[in-house]
Length: 410
Image (cartoon, rainbow, N blue to C red; front, side, top):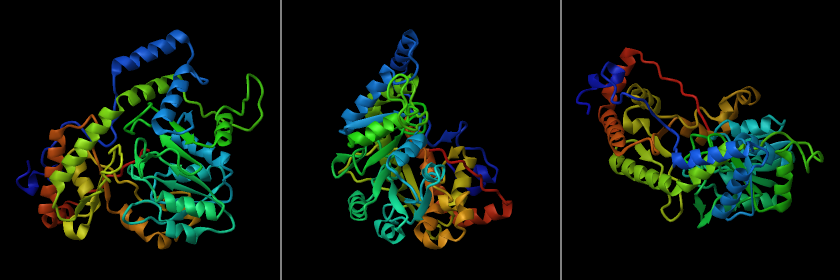
């Protein structure tokens, strides 16, 4: 534990952790069960093209989420691209800027213009009131994002989409196993897209899926993710290669079997962070509705520099020096990344809540690779930093320390 500011690693002391603690380090699950499945794949010599493990994975997701159709994909970005095209998105689609850049790229890649909308400062998700203001004759849809495992204002968005004759797609990359009003996310809007990237609490190494209750839409997406093939050598629609392979599906099934254990671990970590950071000035954890199901995958800390005495980026630099690799989600906002900042250089004027939040958020390590003692040390570092905030801020300025730049990973 630190006793004076000179003992901090950023000011010349030894790091608190010898090995780096990452945000989103993969959960593995039952290694032996995974290897059994991989051995079966090799014995079958069926490695891709809608193999038996992909089919089993899709059925398992349908049953768990209570949806009619799940279409497994190679990753969530391709899933967003295919779902957007299948829904007939064109012209302009309204999305939040406070999201991973793939949400915007999935549209722009297809010549669809993402129109950035501000967020509700309470929920961190797209603000339905602002959505109404962004609708133009060129608007064809809304692509909303469930963030931190907390759902969007689903009812309000569905009402807007219905009244304005717009298609509604949800990026649910953070929200597998989470619920809204007692109903699991997966069957809202026209379709929802999940990510099973390695950083997600439930992973398939790389992967994603589209879920929907629309039979015709599901059939269209299945065509599009397999080059438009409707049979052995019959192509009836334009498509691409979005297929999930068998090894990824095997990992997905193995992850599903351990999902309850992952959630239990994440919830215990969340509760420990909440206890140990309670009352720290300028530090507020994003809370979860205990009446709903959650995966608790994201431990999000919002920092008020005026009260904490340190900026978000100063705390990030301090923790990084201690080998605690916290992340700046979602900095600096899609509207400040290329090509969007060149297209709309003054977008920030319409996104005050996005601008504010992107300067205040840090994501903390959790998951099965993190232990109770790790969290105890992380929280002690944060408490110490805030207790000595003004003094540390002055020392950082005199040392001219550089703030590290992190690369966001969906």
